Structure formats: structure tokens, C-alpha cells
Image 1 (cartoon, rainbow, N blue to C red):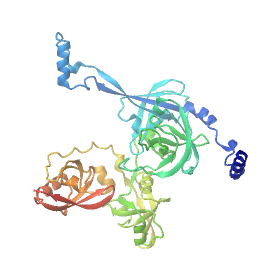
Image 2: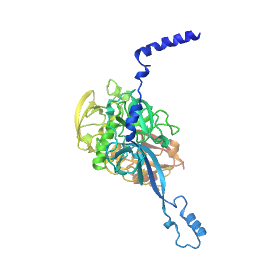
Image 3: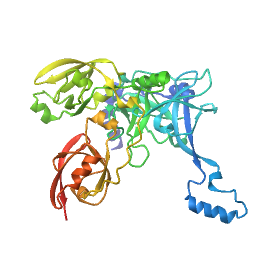
Image 4: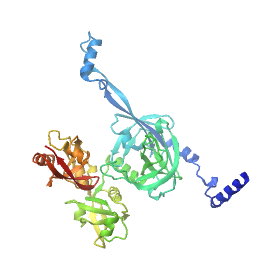
Length: 466
């Protein structure tokens, strides 16, 4: 019986051995790649300064000081020294011999002190050259010379199934290597950023906390991605990780090194996916492209002849398969770039040319608008104005739900962050107009409210009760 099973196993595996799929000699050996590139990998540690009294309310701390030091009238909370609190620990890598380092924005943003730990155990204080939240990239600089550094590869040449290797400091275990394959290309992570200017490489490499900012190598030892995100229900690796493509990173890093900021173009359209229904309505052979829901007034798109209900198929030579592809490609070009756009309109393929405007990401983001807390209404929620950035990117006019409590709004299914564009069939343009409309609502009955959630508009019914 045993001999028969072995014979059967050999027969089943024979085609794979013959084709070379199970030949050990053809499986990648990452040892040389790790040995050659580990000296270029760094660990990033950050510190934040906090007041020593921050953990205890001032009144309680003052009373405690009086009891412990009754004879020292000069001892008070204002004289307490600052303390340092350890912040994030992440990864990074050297990209030049004179000390430029790439890591993730979320690793270092808000840090008062940043230290770069080299593979040879030297430690340097780092200067922030530039931060870019939409791409989640940061460029640092340490004072040294003749440093080992990586070479960038072409991320556009990656294919699903290609082998890749990550080196970083997962959970603080510095200079750890993990291998896997490219699982998908062009991934977008919903809700990650207001602007959605990223198209990630998805891999099954074991990326964990601390790997953020580390490099993703191809088999030639070239950096093709920067590890940035994971999807996990536990906080650890579930085999779904996302890396920033090297071609995007090089564009961002070059701008940060030159000016400290990143400029991106703006087209000026509000768009959504082309599904099977839209494809059938407009006579397309299959769903593809970005459906233009609305062209913003006085935008580059309007000036270039793009109209509502156009379907954008190509942007400057890049095919638009999904609507999330469009902001990614637009963001790779600087304001003032003249770009070619291929449209589908009424069964015809049209060519248009647009001169890109300036994205709101080019301007230092203002503080989030404060919640309007004095606008009481019978609906069970409070609203805040939309930021200028949100209005420019989405083309929406209205207010957002900032605080949802018990009441008709929650009963109707509203959520924090929903954008209200009309109430009781009256257009909402500001918190003031919303408050005015809300104050004139009937005491009871059903009232329509129009909202936009994740780019989709819908009308709900609010039931008012006396």
C-alpha cells in the first residue's frame, strides 16, 4: 500500500518537476540580497516632549505639591520640567551617500526628536527635509558621508506573482527580512486620505508594526516599493500589506529635496465608478474609465471641454480602468502641465487637452474646522462647515455631520462625516443656512434630507416628533 501511494505521488508531481516549478535550484535565495542591502537599512525612533504635569489635572497636582512641600512656596506646576515620551519606531533606508533617508510620514509626523539607527550601530539625529501626508512619505537628512545606499527600480515593471523582499524593524526587531510575492497592483485603500492620490502595491510579505517606511526589494536588489500599510484585525500581519510604488516615491522625494513640499495637479471633476448599468446606458462594450458626475466651475476640466456624464478613458497616455486610477495619475503631474485626455461621449471617442490646476495638497492644510456647537436643532446632531480642501477635491457644497446623538438623524441611518447638501428640499451651503432651515422645520412629520456618503448621493427621511 505504501509503495502504491509513493508511486501515485510521483506520478502526480512529475509534471511540475518536469516543468521546473518544484526545482529547488530555481527558487530564489535572498541571502546575497539581504547581505548586500542591509547596511542601507535604518531604524527610526522618535521622541515627543510633554510637560511633566500632563498626566494629572492642574488642581490636583497643585494640592499634591503643597502637601509634599509645604515649605517651598516657589515650587509650582509652572516650574515642572518637560519630560520626553518615546514615540513611534519604524524603518527607513538611505538613498544617498550624503545621508538622505526615506521613511513614512506617519512614523515621524509630530515628533520633536528623530534618531536614525544605522546597521553598524551608529546613531544620528535627523533633520526633517519634508513631509507629504497624501503619499505617506517623509524625507530626512543625517550629517555623514560615504554611506551605503540603495538603488531604485521600476515599480511599473512589477507583475503579480513576482518575488519581493522587505527588510525592516517589525516590533523593534531591527533589520529583519521577510519575503513574499506581489499579490496585486494598483490598490486603493478607502478612507485612508481625503485626496486618494495613491495606488499601492499589494503583497503577502509579513509586514508588521515597525516595518513602516522600510524598503521592498525586487530580486535584482532594487527598491520597488516603500512599506506603508497593512490590513489586519489583530494589529499583526494577515498577509495583506501595501507598499508605495518606487516611481511615485522618487517623484515625491525629488520635490521634497528641492523645495520641501510636493506639488500636484488638479483636474477639477467629481467622479465615480463605471458599473455595468452605466456601461449599458451609455453603450459601452464593458465597464471601464471614470464617470464624470460633475465638472467643477472654473476648473481645468471645464476649460478643457470636459462635460458632465463624460467617461474619461485615458489621461496623458495612462489608461483609466477604474475611477481611482484618475486622481493617482493626475497627482503625478505638476500644476501647469498640459495633459491629453481621451473621453467617451455619446458613443464617440473624443480627444481633449487640459492644463492642470493646483491641488489643495500643495498648500499647508489648515486646522480642521471646529464643530459648530451653538447650532441647536431638533434633529439630534450638530454640523460643521466643509474644509476648502474637501470642497475643491469633491466639488461638494454643504455641511458635514460632526456630532451624532440620539434623535431622528441616528434613527434615519445618518452617520458622522455624512455631507448634507439639502434639508427639506432647501439647499444647504453653510452651518448658518442649515441652522436657519432646521429652525423652520415642522414640529412633526417626515422631512427629506439629501446627503453624500463616500461619493454617493442619497435621500433619507427624518421623522420629527413633538
